[in-house]
Image 1 (cartoon, each protein chain N blue to C red):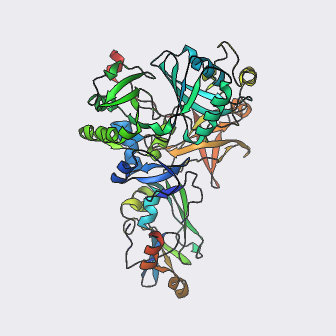
Image 2: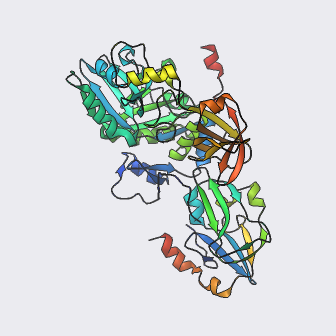
Image 3: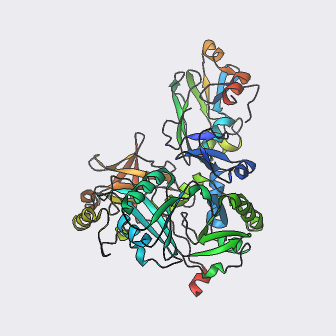
Length: 126
Length: 391
């Protein structure tokens, strides 16, 4: 399973890329591999305020339904509508074309609590 | 994220856990990159890569499944037929040698203990194939129902590997490995044969809605047969397929799954499978009185097919509601975004009184009411092929 060194992670298998104070969010390679073929994605509304740990959206595979939680609190500034049309992008490119949304205004302390790559790697490879 | 709504079986990931039974083909699945799932105490392949690709391979070409978790119970002896006629709802003494029948074992109240496929291999020799989760129940019931009859019931599950090859090209692929003329084996027929040099009971049965075969082979030879099918079928586009594809395939084909559509809470009549109950057979059988009553009174609920638009699938346990009144009128037993049809399909139990009024229906998909349409089962029926029309 690919774990990218330049990203931060949650124990619930979301990844976060911090870019100039904005947090780009997606689900990890481990998550997509566990779920199987993803066939439906529900994204938050742009402008929605989310709290850390709150529900950000939903991902369905053939066999399961999973909620995606907000890794940090803030305001949803952008969503990747392309994955609604092509949910398989979460499988084929979870760290790239399969990104889900951008959260702005995250608290620095919350960002600090995200797992570095090595910690996440340990979590999924016991 | 979390799998809040995921149903058992639990994902075991790519590290099969200790304490689970393993198929005799286990190492072959590892070599093919399988992700495993815990299913009724077994660690079985969930998928090898993409479960959608495996589903489409079976619909369009062929897939090879390992079903070794299914229980093989051998019933033999002068009174084997009599025992099965008493223990099961079907008329198994009337089953010809070399034929198979879909049937059920019920409790005294008519509740379904398991659905079964019974193969008759000889006048006094039957093979009863039960679901893994119900293996011990079925074994214990058959033993108890044998009474003093001259028949022995043996759990031979570990002696067998069960390999299925399913799909429009299954016959052509399997034929490359055997001299037995497979085209002559009828649907729900079986033949004692040799496949890839391995003795096998070759049965034209399956759980995918496609033509295909199930091969009961000695456990120690199962891996070789599995590999031979994949190898010889490579040019035909054959793929190994896991339990995820098996579930979406059977659901499209409108086939019930024990634990979802079938349980002790329903009789075969509720499941729309009253035809398997042979009230016309001579002699008493377990559940007869209750089933006669149910047959006369009509089912307490009805299994129906539902289709929706969009991409959100109704899933097991979701309420079905009357759109006009908002009241709950039933419950989804299985659902999936149909890979073949591209729209959500589901089976559900509905109140017959409500059905008679044909109301507008919706499914409560985690708070969102998704409109559904009632359709006849199955959702998918395989195209009739030219060679079968000629036959």
